[in-house]
Image (cartoon, rainbow, N blue to C red; front, side, top):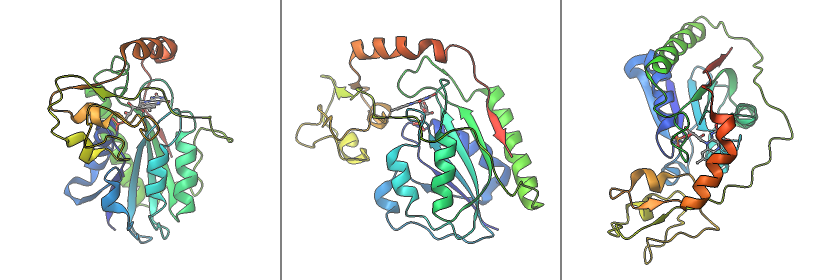
Length: 254
Ligand SMILES: Cc1cc2nc3c(=O)[nH]c(=O)nc-3n(C[C@H](O)[C@H](O)[C@H](O)COP(=O)(O)O)c2cc1C
């Protein structure tokens, strides 16, 4: 049995959650970075003995379209999948259901799922500091339980996760980060933008039609030069503030 960790994590929160769950298998987990799309164009073929932890963030309560595109290149061949949806303390809505349907379409057998909170990658005040110490203990315990169940083949044959179809509508958000004067044109964001939305000849700008608002450029900028428009941030935070106010707990679905 080989264990794989497939993650799409623009700002690192999803990876943190997948790492804590994967710790149960200690050194034996192989990582596949779905965000490094160019490197994974070929996809990977798994076998029925394999276990795949598949982790994605919630974007508008859905699986990011780019993560779905990358997942489609994978051949599950009956490998068992543990689905992980990571969200910014508002809601994961239909993310797990959409992920389950996508994983099953590429031949995975979905055996378990986790919904977990990480710091909101746009509005960092929501879910701030998560996963925290309490989360990490719980996620490690989830990992150990999953490992034991998978080794004993003690998982339900049909997985039921929350969510409904048609999925929640998501047409993107108007937040498209641009760089201020502190940008040194190092081009790190140009090279790492997963959709090539930042032009090399004008790295302070962004092609708003292409940008998926994943916030990777904001997270990696060495100068902290890339930012969203202040007014849009205020309006957005007000809009979701109430829904994000109370601490949401991580959930395990078996
Ligand atoms: C475009 C976008 C949409 C998001 N939509 C939601 C959402 O619907 N619900 C939620 O709770 N968090 C939402 N978030 C927050 C992320 O799901 C959360 O911060 C996640 O941990 C980000 O993963 P990452 O750190 O791996 O990039 C959104 C973030 C972005 C960038």
